[in-house]
Length: 250
Image (cartoon, rainbow, N blue to C red; front, side, top):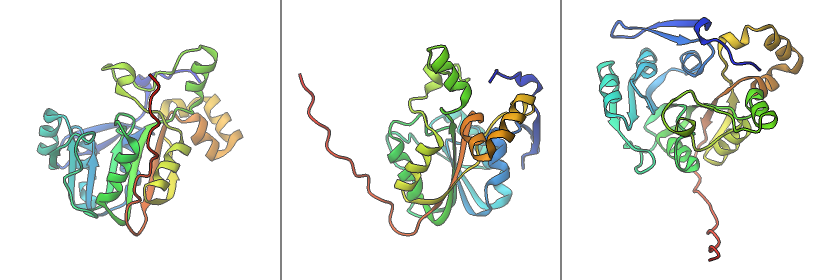
């Protein structure tokens, strides 16, 4: 599929409690989060950045918390009413008790962390049983990425972030990868929403292909992003069972 002109992408408008007007591209991860996150008592946004999504969700929760490793971003999130904490998720656990939250949102973070299995188990730990997690990440099975890999012989660029190779992405996922990871980490009732820009979804080719292949395959192949929701299972978070690595041959 051809790249789309983001200048003509539709945007939804949301008003922050501070009065700021935020414009979010329709069909992409922030827009989906604002439409599907269920209300509850306490929300945690892991990788909250400047706090726009967490702030916009504050009317659905009694408390809204956010963690990030960027001090300047956290300052802005705090101005927007988010209770913030600086956390490097690769080096330290989340600073919350087990079962502290009803919902955890983490948008385009898991592809950056060193160990996704440890990361998802930590999200499960701070969620109460029955709470919901919402994960967004690029979908490496997207037909545009596959075409780049197969026909052009290049690994697809899954990030528009100019900083670092692949925008700092070090892991790549399909919907099936996410479902397996969540199931192994203490979640069930996994639902894939998918995410794609409104501009791409308006093209005739997209609409025809989506109708021909059905909703499930549309999420698998036509949507450049995965947006996955899952429910925390009762009981303890499963331990991470890994065999000891084989000794390296010198």
